[in-house]
Length: 96
Image (cartoon, rainbow, N blue to C red):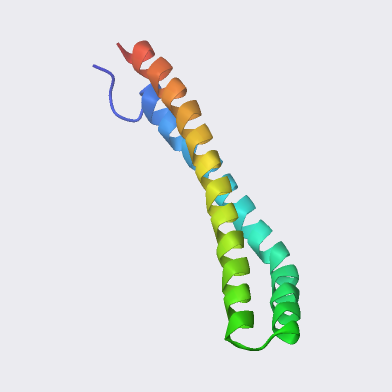
């Protein structure tokens, strides 16, 4: 049995954190970069129509933006998951 801390599997688990944190940082940065554009679009929509219908248009726009961001995140997490699965499988083979 390989002592804990010396396992190739433990080494790979530690490396996954870097990839996950990098992806999270990228999504956060995109959100902050997009914020002025989103705010401008909301102001534009409300300037055109401040009635409940205009508020519905804002809600629809924000929902679409949020859905698109969530889909992009899910694709990234699935890609990372596939990558990690392959890496862990190789690490498990090396331990056995």
